[in-house]
Structures are given as structure tokens and as C-alpha cells.
Length: 464
Image (cartoon, rainbow, N blue to C red; front, side):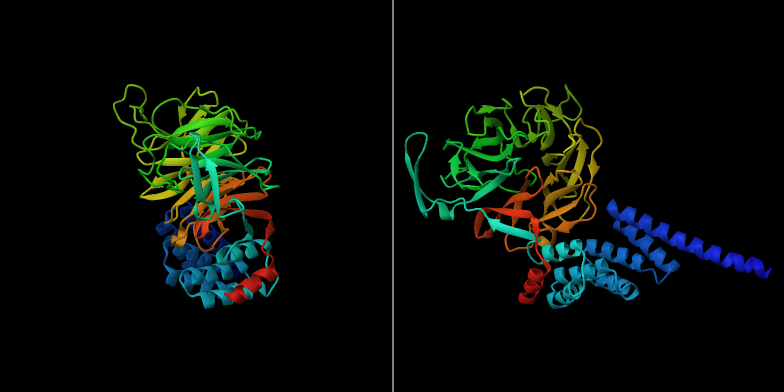
């Protein structure tokens, strides 16, 4: 009798431990798919089984953090740190909630506690991205030598403009990292320019004062550029983020040689086609489109009008156009995975833009993000393991990175101003983006080989 009891007790303890772990795993699965309510129920059930389970408290805190419930998140994280004081990710999460809820002094205390030890690179990166830039950032000087410059339009009219007070945006870095293409409204309409990033010499690629050209994209061999052209909006910078109904009535994708020659339309039909991006083999282009014709999800012959932006793929010779998404809300800003098999894009769910992926040949769409914040402009890392993107989490447009399955998110910028349109070099070392952190929209370069070092981060926190 006693022997049986002694054997039963450790087996029961093992089963309880395994049960707790499986409950947590179910909760994490719910959390990853956006079912926060079910996730919280699982984590609370795990705590009922074992009130000393630090992981259950940690995951519960993440769930409440995602809901924006700072009080409940802090309580859960504080319980987790009490049970597992050496787990740096829990201390970081606690500081992060304090930071975003406005309790900066307490947050800085938590961050400084982490920096006083020997934190891992990922912890340093997360603290740096929360409090400023995670990597070294410099502004690319795209203006002329003087504040005032003069040029001639295609019609021979002389234009005088103030380069200092115009917007530069829509950056794209060449695959080899040597060239930067971008749009500027310095001539009172959007034209495309090409800059040598070594010599900083500038060349104007388009000369059409009645049209706006923007959203350039390099071909994989760097010899061609795809871009968007539409009738001018009178010198106004075109919107950097997608919003339902924000697309122009007409916009056409063009191709040209990298020096601006041989400009020709990719798609010679009416409608709005934007956000072109080349496939890794250079043979196809993915883009967003809203067609004014009777073009539908249900196929030819349907009378349903396609009133939303959808994702399409087309061969570079303008043939074999194929629609990949069929939704009643906008889908846009596609990007190819390096293996050429998947395309990530932005789509709307319950009035919030999330990130999705779909097979490049079409098929089932997979949702990658589930936050209460909109995400835009996805772009894959060269190895396809991560996605860089823009998020308006905490009411600020900042740059983020996450694993390609939507997990392990890390903030890269938290600087004054908004950050848009990330473009990554093929080697993954150089990221360019647009930002108005200097009052007007400008182009910035983030060196992903130069993360903020611990001493510089300590000095930053001391200043804060």
C-alpha cells in the first residue's frame, strides 16, 4: 500500500507538470493566432495547477500587454520576475510595459538593471529599439549644395525651388547597395532621382512635370527600375501608408533602364496599379491593383465590381497577369520571399492593417500578425527568416522586425517623427527608409552591421 503511494506521487507530479506545460503551449498557440481571450484562460488554468509557474505568468503578461491592459500586464510580469529573477526577457517585458504606459523612470530602472549585467545581444537590441534607434542611423543628404537651386522642365521652363523645404521619400536601395533611387517633389511634382551612395552624386531619372513618379523598385540584377506614374497632385507628397480608399483613380507601373532610358508601361490598361516589386529571378512583378472594370474573385462573367486593392503577379513582358487575393478590403504593398515561393503583403482585418502571406502561385492566405495596431510595408531579409515592416503600435509609425512566421517581434526605431518604406540591400547590411524626424520627409540609412553598443546605450538612458 505504502509502496504504491510512493510510486504514485512522483508520477502524479510529472503528469501535473506536463499538463501545465501543455496548457501553456495551447495558450501560446491561441496567442499567436490572435485569440487572446482563450490564451488568457489557458495561462490562468496553468497557474491554477501550479501557482509558482513563472512561464505562465510571463505569457499571461504578454497577453495582457497585447490587449493594452498595462495594469494586468505589470502584475503578471512582476509575479514572473519574483519567481524567475534571472530571466532577462521577463525584466525587459516589465520595463517595456512601464515605458509604453508613460512610467519612464521605472522603465529606465528596469533597463539599467539589465545593462548592469552581461545582457545578450537581443536584449541590447530591444532596449535600443525601444528608446531610440537600434542601429546606427545617418541621414542621406539628397539636397543640392545651396538652399536654392534652378533647373529646366521638359518644356523648357526654368524652375527655382528650395531643396531644403521639400520632401524626399519612396527610397529603394539597389541589390548591391551602391545606388539609391527615391522620389522628390522638389520640382513641385514627384520625380525620380538616382544617387551614387559612394560619391553622393545625383541624377534625375524622370522629367514629366504633369506626372508624379514614385515607388521605384530595382530588378535583382540592378539594371532596371519599376516605378509608378500618375497625374500630378500639385507637389503634395503621396501617402506613405495604405488606407482603404486612398489609392488614386489611375496609376500605371512603368519600367526603365537604371539610367532613366527606355521608359515603357508594364501594364497598358486603366486602373490603379502601384507598389511594384520584382521576383527574385527578375522574371515577374508583384503589385497592388484596383481595376475599374468588371474583374472579380468569382472569375470571368461575374457582375461583381472589384472595388478594392488586390495583389497581382505579372510577367515583366506584361503577359500572364494573375490575381492572388480576393477580398472585400484593400490588400497592398507586396514583397517576395527570397525563395520566390511566398509573397507577404498588407491586408485589412476589422479596420486594422495586418501582415499576410500567400503562395506566389496563389492559394490560401495566411495571417501573420494579430495586434491591435496596423502594419505596413513588409520586406523580407535576404535569408527569408525575418520580415521588416512599419507599425503604428503605440500611435507612432516605427520600424520593426519579426520572424517570418509572425513571432519574435523587435522594434528598430523609436525616434521623433514617423518612419516609412523600408528597403533592404541584398546582403542585408543596409536599410534605407523615409522619415520626417527632421521636420520634412527625408531619406535615412540604417547600418545593420552597427548595432548600438552597451556603453552608448547606457549613456542614452542616462540622458533620458
